[in-house]
Amino acid sequence: MNLSKKDIEEKIKNQIALEFNCSPADFDKTENLITVARLHEKRRKFSDKPFFLQMATFGKSTVISADESIHPWLNEWVKGKQGIWLFEQHNYYELECELRKHGYKMALTHHMFMPVPELIEIKTDLNIKWLEQKDIAPFYGNENFPNAICDKFKPERPDVLCLVAMDGDKIMGMAGCSADTPELWQIGIDVLPEYRGKRVAKTLVTLLRNETFRRGAIPYYGTSLSNLASWKTALDCGFRPLWVEAETQPDRI
Image (cartoon, rainbow, N blue to C red; front, side, top):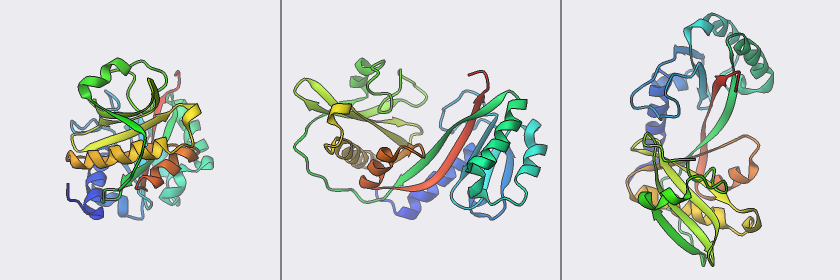
């Protein structure tokens, strides 16, 4: 796949825009935007119904897609606020208090990374084993790999490719990617505690991102604010921060 940095950024922004019921250009404006939550057929299928509220920023404005019942409050909440600061704790607290009145609370905040377009050369003496989609099924339910693969096969965003580093018959670590859309494959990584600090994560994620490009898809990566080890892996493997997104979940969970 021969894409420029601009091409990759535009493709990702287009995808997020259709999920947030807005135009890609809305993320580059100075004013925040509130839209009606909907389920687009080409979305990344993380839920089978619209999130009560989700919000995203690419570093300028924030777009909030939400149930119409909370729109009047949101319109007042965003007034005078710069989009990037809506994700700060003092603003989150205000949002959380209002969400509880509707039976919801904030869930995860995802710090998302795009890849640099170049393949990254990496040499390793690790014993690497590649797993195609048909080879992944035996690993479902294994608690050692919650980030590398899904908890079960999910046809709406299937795990399509994995690779593992082996220490004899023991798996040191696993990296996998799910086809969240046909064009965007999300990479996850798990390394067993006793093998951390040995460049296992860097090697596996780099090899997987390169192979994803070769197969005609765009690899992307996400982590949480405080997972510094995961941030370091992303940066070491040719990923760069691009956007932040967050969503709600029912308060009873």
